[in-house]
Image (cartoon, rainbow, N blue to C red; front, side, top):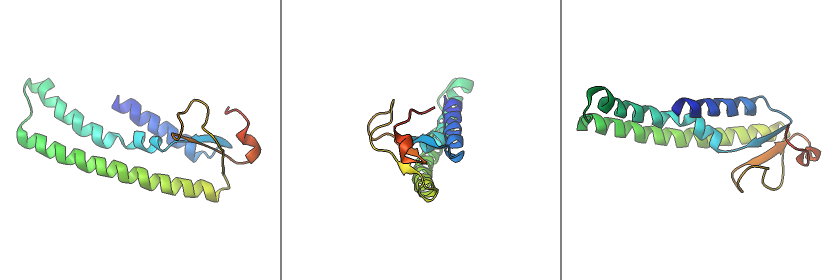
Length: 125
């Protein structure tokens, strides 16, 4: 699941940085990409019961918990910085924000951006 989530994040970011004429921007793509910062400590913590047949030591669990908290802060920070950077970049490239919710998305979860206002009515290819 971690690999799939990371792949979906990379795939979404590659679409964003190809700067197509029409695309749907979601703040969650950066979360998908940075989810690995929390998933790897969880995987490390679950290896002890799988390989040794017993719970990991309390000291190891405390270290992993600290790493997970650091990963959570890093994930939130990276997502925030990416969203600010990317939204200012597409604004400087002349993209226009379409009104309404893009087809297939929940309200307030994504925004459609286009290079020309006429494309707001065009279906996504």
